[in-house]
Length: 98
Image (cartoon, rainbow, N blue to C red):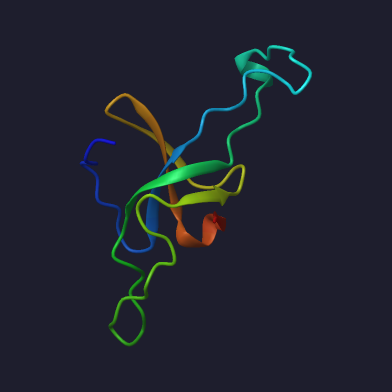
């Protein structure tokens, strides 16, 4: 994976979604319009953490390389170096895949 020239702020996380399945379990090929939006991706960049009232930064619970599951409509879609990415807040992430 190439170095990411993007630094998210506060508790934001940049995720590269995995590609949606192109075929069903029964072997039917799905067109782009029928594919489910991906809800799983790999973390490629993390911010420094949310600024707390105490003046310290809160630790993020994910790191670069983690595979996460996020809400279907959460975050903002962007394109970086020709790749589709998603910028999410830490609270938009539902789970970390172990």
